[in-house]
Amino acid sequence: MQSIPQSAPLSILLVVLAVLFAVVAVLYAVGTIQFLVTDTHAPHHFTHAILFAVLAVASLIAANFTRPRTA
Image 1: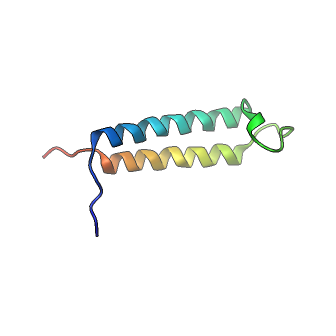
Image 2: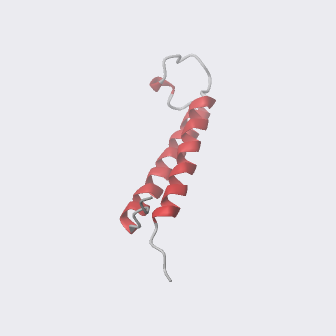
């Protein structure tokens, strides 16, 4: 089994990605970015918001695995 590469820049990139996913999740939940979906008449797209929230959490978990450890 290969080990997970531990890199500070990769970890920081994953945290930035998590923040971006969280912002998109909030925007979907409040209905600000309805133009990106096919049914623009729906008030909110909570399934999209949940998906991006899960992606944010997954990115944070990946960032935790890739951060350099100090002994």
